[in-house]
Length: 328
Image (cartoon, one colour):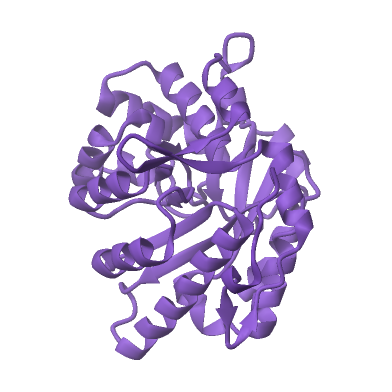
């Protein structure tokens, strides 16, 4: 079912409405016709026949373990640059068996990264998200807004973002206001295009949650990536947005990350996404090296250890979660 978007519902940026391309909505039929439905006392959940059938069958029973290895958030252009690699295909072929992976989502979230990210989508099993990171929010203008929206019509563009708030490096209230404005705009864009939203939040829990509650429908598909916030924040996010998943990176393998492991322990497995955020924060024993999608098994192993469950179950369920969130 295609989304029906009335003119008055189209978000504005600097007085200009988003131009909603029907091709974007047509993509949803490929991934499963997506709609929200009300259930049980006003709560919301994602409803698609395709996703339900995927969740009910084992994805690993006849496939190698690495076929369930999906990196839901990385910066592949930066990874390849740091590894001095030009061709993703030849690089992947030469990875050792323990670092094989099935697919990844690469993020174009700065003006400089948009074109390299689009270029990578020509390769098999590489998908993309487009938007502006909060630390790049100052780059947002009408031309960038139109460029991002155009990129999101690509058949392998699966999400808006990463967008959000980051107060770690910026204490200036004026900078915070710019970040908030651009975050609001990208939330409205993801809703208008019926695409998942990838959220970055760092040392901005209260403002992030307040803006999400104000500008996102409860049924929004949201990936709060590289989660390093509090257990309370995680609980509020999971309660407020039933289709939200929390992404964990190699940080959970670090000795000084017990607070994040405590969050892993309370987040239901069917609400977890595995990601590297490569090239940053490679998991132990690769810490200090270039993180890449082939390191996902180390993150999965840590989740299994923290939750005291089977490693293959972690890979299988998180693979299903990626399918439910992104349709891949």
